[in-house]
Image (cartoon, rainbow, N blue to C red):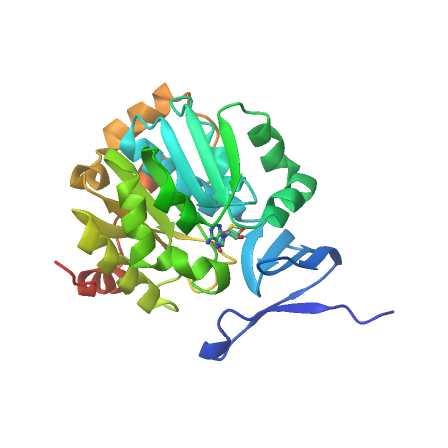
Length: 292
Ligand code: SAM
């Protein structure tokens, strides 16, 4: 019997360790215009997507990240109509955002058309409802270019990017956050994929420092995603409305009830509140993110 292939996640090679996954079946593999893309079947995590050696999404645990990147900013805001997703080509977050009836228009700006095309084939559970929803607009463009030129104003911006390497690097720059701020409506909020603090502490401190140079409130909230190795994942938080982070549990629960208590597997009003209670080492990293 042929030796099974094992695929390493090479994201933390500089830290001297690798997670490696045994491949049941390679479903799709190509070098796209922007990055190396591989989708394979894993016996425990199910379908797994890796871009440039970094795990993006697995069928087993995608719900944690997708729900926390969408429901936390939307229920904190409470009345978001115009939402922008930067990246997110697998459409997992788009599917969660469109569960909010208050959303009138959702624009997704993904740089790599291949990711969206392959997601239509391999993640129909996300792409089917999303592309059938007339509120959804799919744009293929560099997120930096899009926010630099758009004249639209967004209530919530969700930056579901790859890590700060290759095409995703610019999405961690002050230039990008400045352009995002310009395209944000009053009272709006931006959330970002901001890495795993214990392994990517610099990513968090530099991100929050940039937020604090541009916004009244720059911080993060956390969740644990099993295949984003290293414990807590940090999601960046940037807004000129400091009260959003303090939205009372009662208000979040009431907004969820009004939204129809749609089913979730991770997010709850209590988890929403708890996600902003940062473990001390992460709170210290955030506190060290000086700018003002
Ligand atoms: N949740 C994943 C994570 O945390 O690593 C990210 C998932 S999503 C697939 C990331 C997407 O960002 C990819 O499809 C990638 O093509 C897209 N992306 C990377 N750089 C981009 C850019 N500059 N503009 C728009 N999309 C970009």
